[in-house]
Length: 510
Ligand SMILES: [Ca+2]
Ligand SMILES: [Ca+2]
Ligand SMILES: [Ca+2]
Ligand SMILES: [Ca+2]
Image (cartoon, rainbow, N blue to C red; front, side, top):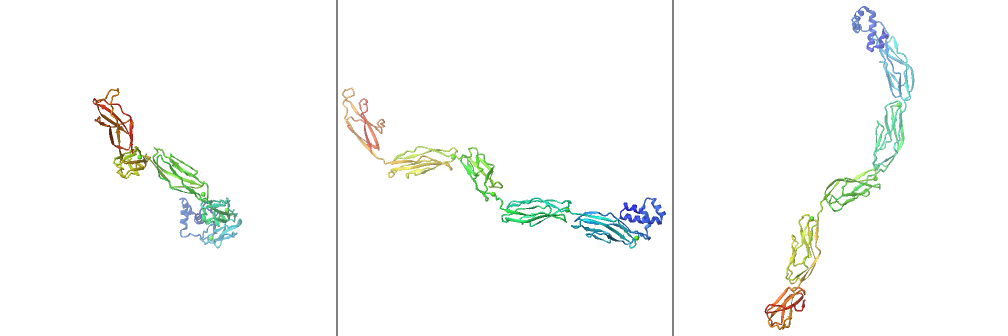
């Protein structure tokens, strides 16, 4: 009955079972009565009142199922169950105790960590309990300590690192026992950090950390055995340095005019550079070889072209200018100016020239003049050049230029000269023989007078003088300006009949 309870009961249960067996032996009738109620625990308690510990000497009991194996580095622990129906104090003992373990005589606990090198079989272990009179033992058992396999580290850490660029290496770690591993490192480079959970070695060396970092060893331990990788070295060399780009692109251009911007770019490593652009204006072309952005926005492309970004790459890294915009404004159309100024003026005579001018944009126009004669005034609003040269202003006023401006662009007439002439007057004395007959040969008896016609060309006699005196034979024509004058005469009779022109005479007034 006792052994049956051992196999199914807890420690407390077993203690009661032992007591129950004793009580049933002493007072079977009471126990049977209570058992009829199905309350066996109540039976035990009822019979233990005032008599918890049996007075009949009984050997202590010991029970428990020890663990039979572990791996080096692992901890062993086993505590047996023991009881004594007489409430005797119990004392435990052991034989065949493994040398790496300790034993607690108070509770029978066998424990300890199997160290490296402890692999093997530890037979003949016997744990006993004594109540001072009787000794009871567990069945002799063995503990097998298995060899702890060393963690295996593998992987090829890169032997070179570049300044400014990240270096990283994670070893492949494996423990044949499946034990949890923790990592360590010896001679860790100062520029790198190490993760003891993963074994990752990572960092970015700076330009001041060039050189060889040798004898680096990464280790992995399962708590007992330690595997390692290395030693290895990392040579830190100068890494790629980013290219630089600079320049200030113009922010505006007038439609119809050319735009051009070329950034400056260099690479400290002398890498060959390639340019790129985003948001290139449609009217422009871009050279990936030089970075030149150029073009002439046509009329109708006015507007703002934004977020233009020009970058340069050394094949590894790209540097870019800040984004910029280009405002294309409508082109100003220059004004036009026309007119043919007089080139000669006589002293005392007024001179006046007003150019014609217009602007396709309707811009307000202002006029200007260079080399204005002192005797003339100029109206900036109308462009009128006018004045009357005085007697002391004879001469040639050359390279006079009249211009018009719309505020942005201007137009000018060809330069011209104004010659101021002296007002010289001359005279011509005409003399003639009075006619005595008509063209048909008949005598002319009623001659009434003469008419003098003259002008500045032999075909155009714009001036005339009528002389109502048949007795005259000469006449002085005066007040003739400089130039060559041509003269003809006619004769007329009392009836008004007039002859043809005489032969032409001429005189040049200097
Ligand atoms: Ca005892
Ligand atoms: Ca292991
Ligand atoms: Ca570079
Ligand atoms: Ca204009």
